[in-house]
Amino acid sequence: MTRLVLDTNLLVSALLTPQGAPAQVLALTISDPDIQLCVSADIFAEYEEVLGRPVFRRSSYEIDGVLGTIRESAFWVKPSETAAACSDPDDNIFLECAQAAEAHYLVTGNVKHFPDSWGNTRIVTARRFLDEFA
Image 1: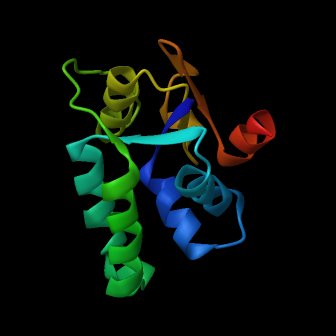
Image 2: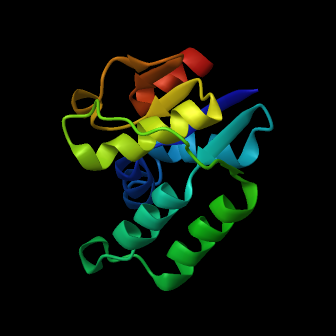
């Protein structure tokens, strides 16, 4: 099973552009039994806060649906170690989750904010993940 962590920007992109690569990655995490989305409480809280921002103009129905699916289907972890490797310190929660989950991938639209890898976790764009997973 392939475990992955999704950066919040990927989730936002998936909702804003339903035909794009981020939406395809999100759909795989929901429908493919060989892919397991991994989340922590901090990541889920960020998903909730960011998706609810008025600038994205998503309905509460759409937000609740996505978050409910993630809440029910994701592999939840509680990171026990902190990370300080991202250029944006707020992104370290994704590395911490990836480490705790022993994730294979961290998928983001901002690869420049992250190191190339974190332990055994590769940090890739949605397109790169789709190309490698296919």
